Every structure is written in structure tokens, then in C-alpha cells.
Amino acid sequence: MADGLQFYKDIRDWAEAYEENYMVPAATNKKTADELVPLLLFYVPERYKAAASAIVSVVMGNRLRAAMM
Image (tube, rainbow, N blue to C red):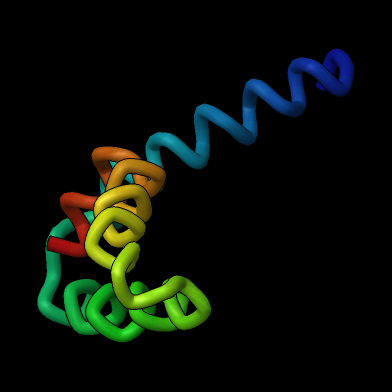
């Protein structure tokens, strides 16, 4: 290992490859998302929950959003 920057790049490359192979759409991921999003929005006022839910989806990123269906 050359240095800390090389270590970072190696970890990043490994993580991206791992996500491509294992972060795939599955019913269990959907179930997790259906339980997690309301938890994340627990303190959000009711009138803002629809917008906040959309924001959560955007923040997830494409791969995670696809995996969580």
C-alpha cells in the first residue's frame, strides 16, 4: 500500500464492486425501506411528510433506491 490516498481508492473501488454485486432489488430490502422511511420521518410534521419522503429517496442514491424498490 503506497499511502492513505491509495488505501482510500482501494476501499472505494471495493465498496463500489460490492454494491454492484450485492445491492440488488429484493423483497427484504423493500420491507426494510417500508419500515425505515417512517422512522426517519417520525419528527417531520404531517404536512411535510410527502415532500420529506421524496427527499429521502433522492438522498438514497440510484443504486440504494433501486435495491429498496
